[in-house]
Length: 597
Image (tube, rainbow, N blue to C red; front, side, top):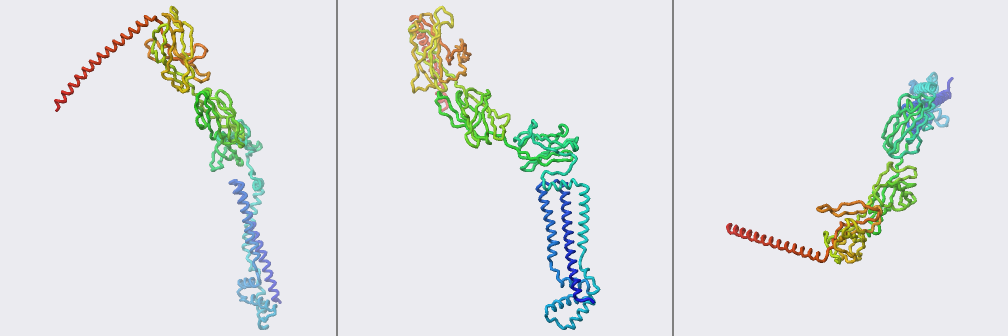
């Protein structure tokens, strides 16, 4: 006959079976989440080829989901207290005929074991007998809900079967998926296999970086064991800064080699090669700026003879200064340099020297000589092996020439006559942009009966002007020329002119030689090339003295006086006529005024 102990054992079996059901259901849930997450991750990665960081985050999400499911539906469920009263109540809820007998019997039996008074023994015995009679044929295990276990078990089995089929059908894909967890560069199998992607220069040599503004040559090598497509592929360049993309064609060169060229690299980027059904991992392209002159100064050193202070420092650029000057150039580069130099148009090289430890500041070892107008450019080589822009900027050099002095005889203003012992006064002006150094009187004596241009050319230097004189503008300077020392005779002719020179010692300056204007010619004297290699100086137009006797000179003077007297008388007559006309006009004006009153 059944006893209360039998009922207790049946309740213990229910508790054990229920714990097993909870465990199996939780494990089914966990397996389902694991298998579904892994399969979903595989499909997502296969379709979208997730970046490595996203793959790792997805793996963490899968592990987190599996752990959460196991904790919630296994560990927390197993920790719940399933005591006898709870199980008894669940049995009674499914068997209304018990009407509270089962839980009452179990509670009274528990209290009885503790030694406490629980009521009349006869009544308690009657309750136990009645409880055993009703509960005996009942199946307590029906209170265990196995619906969730079946549902999640079937679902996990279906997903597991799909997983097994995929593993058998596509083992290499799942192997690649696993490898992609531990290797960023691992890829899924493709018919076309990309073996290598190289960033090269225009000569095909692999490079570690590209200069900003240069072409980017990309060479793609395929594995000849895979399929070599007939059609062209593509290269996709992606900016690291803003993610913008530039696609270009990837053309077949020969066999398994493909290549493409990006016209200009402006910033850091990555490139992905797409050929056939394969595409490479992103390859980083490091873009470095070329070295350039960031800022600089030019300090001119003028020739000493100019007598001028050096101008303030100028900004780096073209050079413009007096010929014979020099320029000290300093600059700061945009990047540390290994070498810097100036190359002139005439191929002369002027090296720079470093003036700071960082290699950013440089100055010319020797000043730049401004000896002639030409141009120059700067060649820079930085510590990365990059040079500045090619072709480099060409800077002009303007060597301002020191102008030849100018000299002009003011008196006598034209050819004239002199006696053999005359001392004519010669008045002249001389000018130079930086000061006249010396002035010579140059002449030759053409004896009577000899032709034009005969006679030895002689010269002597005129006295220096006073120290306080403005040597740039010698105005109305004069000297007396004693002709008696020349032992002249009537009929001789003295052709003379003035020559001037300045302090400029530039041998490249072209000397200027002038000729005497022809009769009736109003144009200024034109320049002629020097006839010899002898030093030539600026000169004025020549004048001519014709030697006459004292009597002839006296007659000439008398005739000149008579001419002047006649000119004065003519002027006086003209003045008298003018006065008469003025008086007539005044009288007519007065008459008109009287009529209008």
